[in-house]
Length: 426
Image (cartoon, rainbow, N blue to C red; front, side):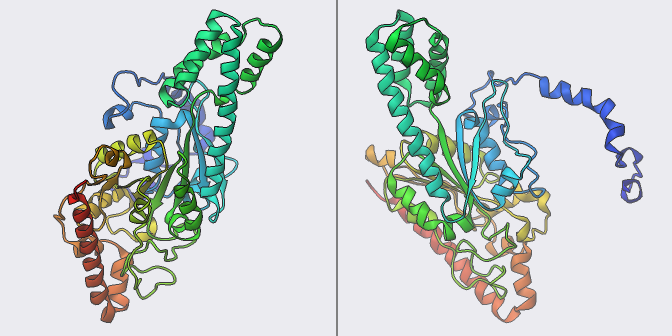
């Protein structure tokens, strides 16, 4: 009873039976959801402008303050109306698709993300297969469009399909071209012309270039699904991989993963993790043709926005590793402060922001950009803000200080490595 625990004894906050509230609150809800989206006044490629776009992700049911969901919410605001998502088992498959509900929704035009879940061990290949399937269908569509153009069914048909063929690999431009194609599909034609127009009517869902995303946590990307992830990155296929890095197997109870840093307490590392965190981003960057970035939304929203736009525009595999505070961290500030914890992670040098963009190498520039600055906050002060570290201090004081010193040294060494890469000449 909130009236008993709220200092102000505010009885208006008392929970009430749902059926007593529907008659008065449903009209308010209907009014709000029927308001038109006003996303035309600012560029959607800016932080502020993007937030005028409709999120095609809502009511996820994730833990309050979850560090994962804000990332995918923004992705759907930018690309959601043409997204296909392959989601690894884990937290993101639980808040992403617990039947009979799903947080992924559609806009007024009926467009939204297409979502499917696969296993830990094969989700990257699952998303890769989605991309290959779409490529095969659209290649056949391109050939059919050229055949239709050669038939010269009508000037309108020829113009619409000529434009579509020109821009079919451009996500934004293919939307406008698709409208023109849809407007001519009812054109009267005979024989082969009628057959091809019918073919495009049956395949109209593939007219707009899809944005293929592969989602999952660090347990999938760093550990169980790493072999498949590596295979997909090596393929060179144009897919976008987003890793929610909670540094622990969150959904299965908080087990240690290869992403768990030195000194952190987790299941199977009750006395503190002894080996340093795997640098998944640097492993991927060694290919040279994979776009890779580490982001932290709470630390730099502009950086996150820039990474999303660069990764999606890159014609090849992209890997985005996102720092995601988790309830398993035991955040002393509370889960309402996860964005602030993301900020402090970067300020303390615990997490670093960087990009590896292969297109810069083609321009004769260093593809590696270090986007975070020298730490301004104590590393030890940051980790003492989470129970996964203070627990080690209280239960194993004889090893805690040594492990924390090792963790600090490893973070410093990693930053120095990034700094050396940023200074390399090309």
